[in-house]
Image (cartoon, rainbow, N blue to C red; front, side):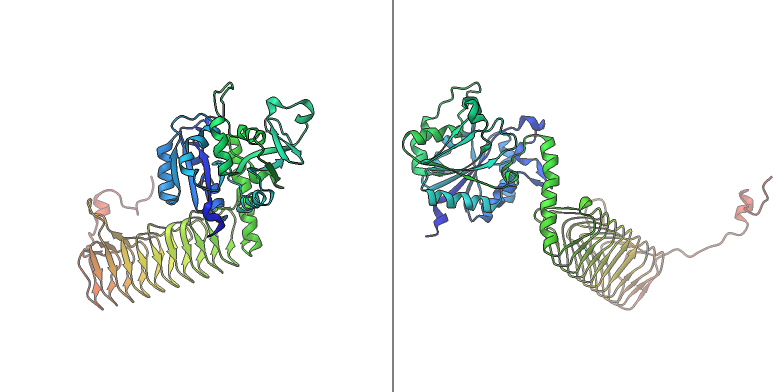
Length: 466
């Protein structure tokens, strides 16, 4: 049996987060467009922990919706009355009671790493302790529980109970624990709430364990930032930049070329290949993928976009939920969205919008056009100003354009309509019927010149100014 099969993790996410001054639950506030809660869940997953539960409370329905959509394997356990961290662990004993080891950690610790969690579990096994916690050296330890080390382990002294000499100690409790479940079960019901808030605090189980002869141990983690939480908008803003820098550093080490890291934002789930080039003022979010050799131009924003090898996204483009094929070129000032696929070597040019469409291999939509709900074949040219008129007020209708077609400038394609392979449309046409293979479609009124019209209207441009 895998040693991790009997290990579970309880993520505390029931708090309202009053200092955030928002109706949004604290753990759903976003860091680089990802909810705070997703970060510790990712760390647990990377550490190999499969049994995970989140304690919900304030905004429980919103948190549960997020878990259902993004973390379907994670259970949600309701703490109906938020009476402290100890109470949260106590009311969920039915879930963790049959495990061997329980990790307990906050849901607002976005910098927590899988390495820190693995170190915590290793220390627990090596020290044979009933409770093991991660500690760190704090520049200002005020408000933290101090770590008092001794031969038989350690004890935690809270700020209110610390003697003057103990307050000088800078090693403090992070609030991230690994418990032996059999030991935790013996003391969790003994917690008291004799404090101003009337709450049950999880750190209070540590002296209860020590009093009963159980060992309590602390592992000093070298990076305090990894264990820090988020409590207000200022801390969230600072964390955004810190996380941005971490992510960019990791990509730079792997060979990504970033012209200006100070103006570049890359989300935590983005994947970048080797030798990708990213110019200044670029944002890449969601589950985006940029493969090797591709380049992203300045001021472009990508969200859930896949950019294949050696493709070029020129400046000022907005790409959402789409795929750009290898060696294709997009932009500048292009908008591609809603499951669009741009084929290999294709061109989507200046001031072009493409929505829910397929642009075939080596086809071109060079400028000033809209392709909506369209399928374009191979090596087809779409002239400037072409529009697929796809919406009739009730339905989005498809336009199908074959291979090797030439669509003249300023063509209106009134969907549903099909242009078969090798056909042409005359510039300025409104196409309402299917065009056969190899045919030329002309859908415009015959020009008629009315002689003398300007003179009769008194608007003759040849008149001299008086």
